[in-house]
Image (cartoon, rainbow, N blue to C red; front, top):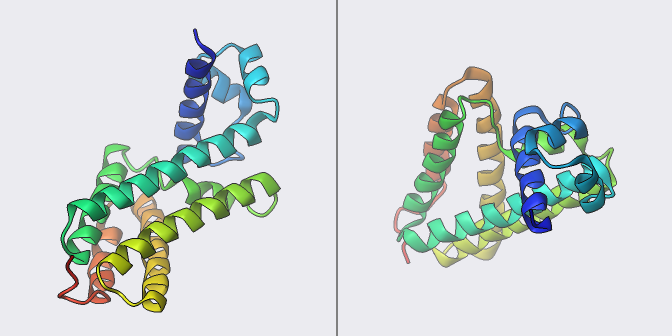
Length: 192
């Protein structure tokens, strides 16, 4: 098996386990077992151990969420449709996992930041990239720069808080309930 395949399997396993359990509840031995990768390969590919694997998982999530936000933005002619589509995507994710997989960076941030310098930097970078993607989308829909920045933070905080409540209540009702309030912040004529 190629090194890149083994590396990808290890990161994929870490992504699954970290979303479900958080950083501290996920052990390196569990990642190794879940991935099926040889123990020696894990130590060779990730000499920094579990923290290095988690940082790599965060980097993948960062790229994935940035791409997702920008793709949804390209597919929707209004800010309202864009926000509704993103909310529905995250609601579907929560439902399809049986509410056991939350937003990955939320889980790791609550569990590990600021005690781990590496994870702190990785999580901050993820939020910076995501907030930029949301802000860019809002700017493209005609929001003024200062308002777009604040609204992006509101959107991120609302999504993360709602996702935590969704897991606690095993329902997407909290997300469904906050989306109209976020939509109320958007101009009704914000179209491309």
